[in-house]
Length: 244
Ligand code: ADP
Ligand code: MG
Image (cartoon, rainbow, N blue to C red; front, top):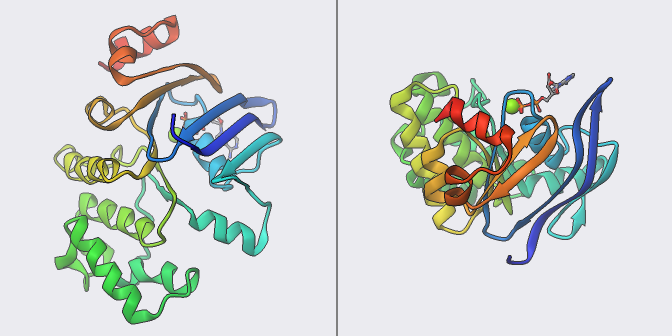
C-alpha cells in the first residue's frame, strides 16, 4: 500500500450501552478508494463521523496525514477542512446561491480572496457539470445537481481525503449515476476516498478495497472482485445475498 493517509488504531465508541465501534483498525493509503458496506446499524456512519470528529471516540487514535485529530478549536477546524464530507442529505445553504455555497468555506476558513475563490468555484462547478446553475438557489436544482454541488463544495476546501456517507441513497434512481460518475472521476484523478455505499457498480469500477462492517466490527475486507465473488464470512454472504 502507498503511504497511509488515514490511520485508525483500536478505535472504540459507545452510545450508552451500545458498543458501535469495536476495536476498529484501518489504514487508507494516499489515493486509495475504500468502499464501506454493511447492514444498517453496523456503525458505518459513526465511523465516518469519527474520522471527521463529528463524533468523539472513547479510545484509540485517528490520524490524518500523520496528525492526530485535536479535540477542539482552530486546529480542529483546520484539520476538518482536510477531510471533505458528503452526506445523504445535501445540506446546502438554502439562502445562498450555488456559487456562494462553494466559496463560503474557502473565504472563511482558507482565507482565499473572493475573486480567487469564485474563479476556482466556477472551475469546480464546471467539473461536476453544474456551472450553468451558479447563480441559482439550491431549491431550483434537482437532487442530483445539489449533490454534485455538495461534492464541489467539499472539493473547494482542497481536502486530503473525501468521505461519502450514502451519497446517492436519497436520490431518485435516474440521478444516481450522474453523482456516481463524478465520484468515479474523482477516484481516477487520485483522490483518497472513503465511500459508504451499496452501489456495487461503483465499488467494482472505482474501489481498491471493500470493507465489510457488521455490529461495529470490520468483518472482512478484500478487493471488490474477491469480495463480491468469494465473500468468506457468513455475515457477508448473507448480506450480499440480500442486496445483489
Ligand atoms: P450505519 O451507518 O451502519 O447504519 P450508524 O453508525 O448510523 O450505522 O449507527 C450505529 C448504531 O449506533 C445504530 O444502532 C444506531 O442506532 C446507533 N446510533 C447512531 N447514532 C446515535 C446517537 N447519536 N445516539 C444513540 N445511538 C446512535
Ligand atoms: Mg449510516
